[in-house]
Image 1 (cartoon, helix red, strand yellow):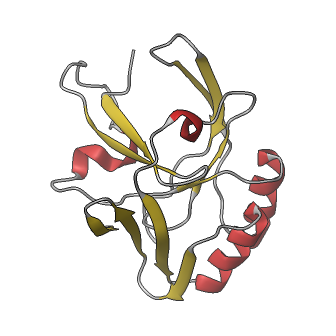
Image 2 (cartoon, rainbow, N blue to C red):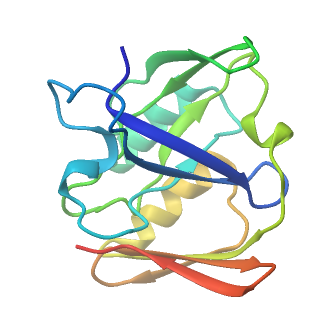
Amino acid sequence: MGRGTRNELTGLGGATYLEVVGPDDDQPTPMHPRPFGVDDLDAPALVAWCARPVRPLPDVIASCRALGIDFGDAAPMSRARPDGVLLQWHLTVPLLGPPHHGTVPFLIDWLDSPHPAATLPHHCELTMLRITHPQADTLAAVLAELGGTPKLEIATGDATLSATIATPNGVRELSSRR
């Protein structure tokens, strides 16, 4: 049984991709809220972002916890692609509430599964991810624990997230809404 969402992916260059998540009317209404606050959205929004640490996920979670950002434990997940390939990964829950509002990445370890970006078309490119966070120094320390995140700007302020994407039809901005 699904979680009441339908997802669509497109490559943004290299191992970066955009995943659009929305309600799936072909599934029964789930007993729990849909992931990423989908049930609370009334317009498209950049809700969260994900990072793939270069070190083992449990080690990164522990290091970040010591810095004051608690991702919780990673949960095992899986799904079969339409071609029958089974994807398995571990994932932390996005921190969508205050003070982070999706500005701290949730974390993923693709284990031995093929990375989704490897088979996606890459007609667009992420040119910049901009984050404002009330504790920008702490966020920067957490991101350093992940092993680096290129194309990123961090500033101090109310939690917001925006992405600049170069597309065949020009540059587009995606932003968070609260």
